[in-house]
Picture 1 (cartoon, rainbow, N blue to C red):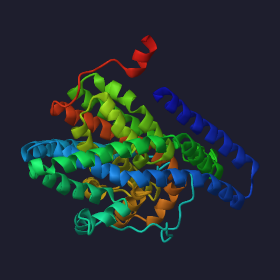
Picture 2: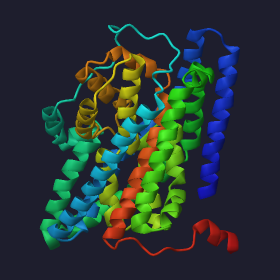
Picture 3: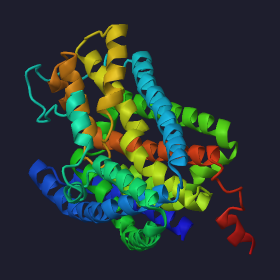
Picture 4: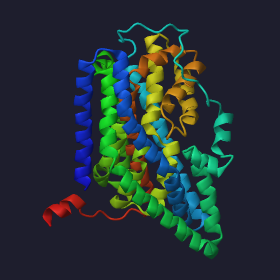
Length: 420
């Protein structure tokens, strides 16, 4: 099933490219192209709605069970500190790498496109930048509201309180822990049904994008797109090296184990879409359920490595395009600012653009510069979504190893089947 699923995803991507290119080449009217792409988007939207349908109960149930199984509060605190420590390290590396790579490659300086007027609007509101708004947004006014709106960060906060309280009442809560655990099992089963629809969603997502944008736009923005994906490659390498320092050569098997959710995140440009499959593959890899159920949901709020690197890379790209030089002090300030404002972006479509808009405003860089990246943002979102999956997978495996909750290496399932 594993290899077949990967093959179906790849076939969906390839077919989507060919169909989208054919439609883009044969239809010259922009309005007709948008209408055709809209039909494809129906399939993608339905799939993403199915994912949103299961994400809140899945995060809540798995996180609560994970916390309840931690045992005493000392164990919970130790795991929490180790998890957040790794997230902080990965965040600093991601943000600094974005600054370093865009400064070395200078893709904005070589952009051969007319710049949008500085007073033009990109239609994206720079909201949610202040520390006050971020902290108050952490706490849900209602658990039901948080789940209804798929506010992952708020769901995580409520789940932590609920899980800690459930663990604190000891024997009285055992039955409820069992019930919540069964809910998690049911939601994972529902996830399996939803994933059967994934190849069709991948085909539709790629076809819709190529139909409207064509492949020529990749040439126009070649330096920017190429530089960003090169930077992602460097980030992957750093994360793998850091992971290998803790879990050893098994980190390469981990990357292979999460290839399906990574490919799914890439093709749908959604980290959220890959969450259920990532959780499943991490447990198959050997991470204990209590660790993966705790670390992964937190990672979706605090450890979006690809999205964080994109924020610094894109912001400085726009500054370069407008010939605005930021001092070293300003760049350090940007890094510290984005350490806070980049959190909680999972599950919010194009949330990176909102964060970038706010950062541009803070440093008095024309917000109109967002118009330069909007045309190719979907192609870039594919890469950063896949990177988010890789970063959180490595983080989960590392914490599991530190806690002695990573099962010894076993023969690869595919190899076992091949020899049987």
